[in-house]
Image (cartoon, rainbow over all chains, first blue to last red; front, side, top):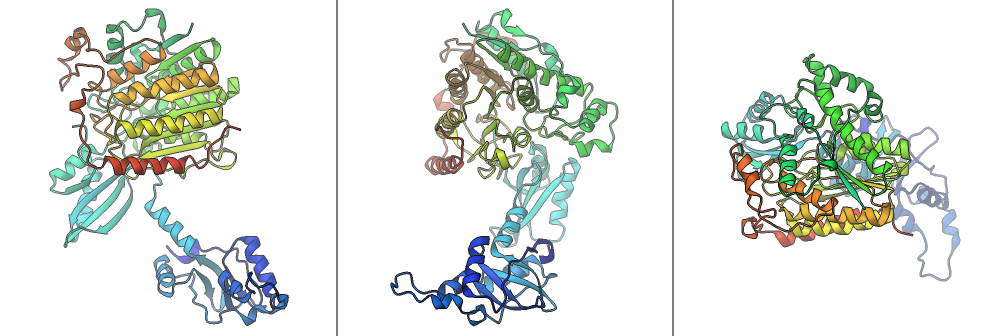
Amino acid sequence: MLIEDMMNRNIVTVRPTDTIRLAMLITAQHRIRHLPVIDEYGKLVGILSDRDLRDACPSKLETDVDDSVFYRKVSEIMHKDVVTAHPLDFVEEAAYSLYENKIGCLPVVDGGLLKGIITETDILYTLVEIMGVQQPSSHLEVEVDDRPGALADVAAVIKQHQCNISSVLIFPGRTFGKKNLVIRVQTIDPRKIVASLEESGFTIIWPKNTGA
Amino acid sequence: MIVTYFVYSPELLQYSFHREHPFNQKRLELTLDLIKNLNLISPSQIIAPRYATDEELLLFHEPQYVKTVQNASHNNNGSLASFGLGTEDTPAFQNMHEAASLIVGGTLRAAEIVMNNQDAHAVNLSGGLHHAFSGRASGFCVYNDCAVAIHYLRKEYDARVLYIDTDAHHGDGVQWAFYDDPNVLTLSIHETGKYLFPGTGDYTERGDGQGFGFSMNVPLQAYTEDDSFLEVYHTVTTKVARGFKPDVIITQNGCDSHHFDPLTHLSCSMQIYREIPRLAHQLAHELCEGRLIATGGGGYDIWRVVPRAWTWLWTELSDRKLENIVIPQDWIARWQPESPLPLPKSLLDPLEELPLMPRREEITNKNRLTMEKTLLYYPKLV
């Protein structure tokens, strides 16, 4: 999955010459935590997080508040060396970049120009989609040897039952040399598939025997 | 004086995919025979279903899908697959359209009886086919009788409908049918879709737009057992029904949560099938002048579970008093030769036969947390 397929293209931005006050109003109004800063050509020149904005504000415990900071320029507090993503990056690269740099968003930049933005929330949503259920289906979990063709062998058994597969996830097994396949099969009654898989020597983790 | 009607005719048994298929309507015959053996029904209470008309089916289903079902039995090609037909779950069979329309007509008949008579309940145990989508068969269900009937109740009577689904599987077809409709509240209590078909039915599915808060789900853990199931059912159903104030209640009484059931893992006993209809019945009288339509649903141990479960349902709705008595010898003698397993001896399960689940406390706590999340949004009493 590419970043250009999932990035947010409606980007809310500020200019370096805008005031801190305006930047704060915009984050509050759009309920966002990150503001890319662009110049008049659409080139990314910096980024502001809601924490940067708060750091610039006077403490609310202070009684004698000096309002003048609100009228200082965004360029004075923005971060200029921004970690970015490219539209052709994969989602896992973006996820790794967020994780590695301990940051919450990546402006998506192509040729210096800002094209979109991707946040940790978007990445989490992708995970929700991948792990989730798109078609009515049952959960089938099979432990297989970590060898070429294991997935194909399991899939062949499911094919014999003319059953569609709606998703497949492969996890490291609980013991060395094993993998767990989590397959969502489009049937309400996976018993025949389970029986065939057991007959072929596979270990079924779920469904467990019922109806005893 | 309340009269309760039982929608039945032997033709309902023609909804049959093939002899080895787990969905087997022979359970209707077994159930009615047990009810008769216990002297719980008079002939005047049995009423025949009718066929749903095409217009009625089209209240919910797509024209292209109905056409495909009509032609399915003699047009067995690959195009069926995109409509969910011709699969192992829902293979096409002779006269599938007629058999499926009779079930829908049965639930419509039940709805008419309840809406047109003062003080009547009606039971259509052949219905409750809650997985069917508007354009696709799914999970043994061809036409969705509950969804059609609810559309019918909306159109003909402008009724606010509360749909309560206690099948072990999520009532997905009915939920999606009314996902944005604030006049239909669908409540489904089922085994979590993390493992079980159809996979949906998380508490986060709450409805869309105007219908937000009018779709409710409690996904229960595998091995939930009676006490936790009933605690969740009583708490959620009572609150939601009183908050929503329906004009009519329609229940889906799938009985596949029993520990004998071969497809599911909730591990309950016959006790829940005695309790579930009791609360629905009471709420129907408290909130909507007794207008209560009960349908069947899942139930794949047709010998040991379904006849007893639905006998309890019928007993409750027809206001008969019944204790945990011995099952009549006549019934056992008649059916034991056909049953692959020994038939049960009493109407409830002997306590010593119930399986012991090691993580009961943990599972009960988890179910309570899920229920609290479900109850974050629902139509509250003002």
